[in-house]
Length: 250
Image (cartoon, rainbow, N blue to C red; front, side, top):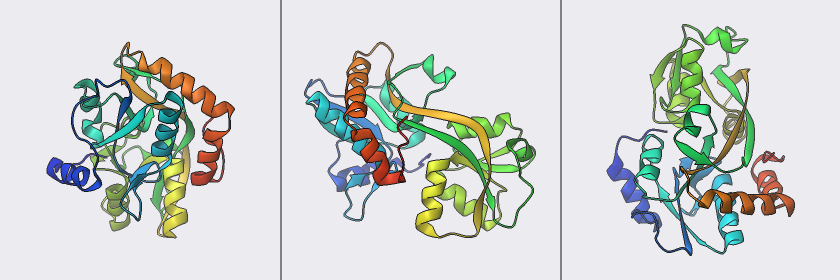
């Protein structure tokens, strides 16, 4: 999810009419940092507009709070720096709740629950468990929880910009595997019909993803209230069904 060319990002922001300025002092506006390149969670639709599961959940939260949502597209490896510098108020980008991140940021209640998986080439039968990635070269965004999981499993991590580049390196034989969220991988396999790669095994870990905010920011209580209402009225389930065919929100 790392992007090297910040100018390209700002060009996309300008092209899509998204704001790139600092966090809002206007209580009626909620500025949200997201990549815009991470399908099916946050990406550009065929009409060029920002869409995806996280985007729709964020907009639904804004509606519940009576606040206008403005998205700030930001590369993953710069997204927490953007939050800390107050370029936006909240991050909505499938941020996994981890013990390390909880020491630095505040999290809402989870709105996605998922499993991690290991992806290999289709003709590679050497990975039957997460332990089997030890010694292999694994393409990962180095600051992601998947990068950390690969490192902890003993893999040699090849840093990439995101899922698309990881798959390209895997298909070309330059790396042996990649770890990612099962929802991302299954959506890719379903929409692309790519038979050259496969899910070799699950990581055995369940991840919870949530909105991230700055420590002690009262916005977290607002997010939790909105998410509770969206869960109760079926909105989260409806958005989940739209993108995944099942309810991944709990």
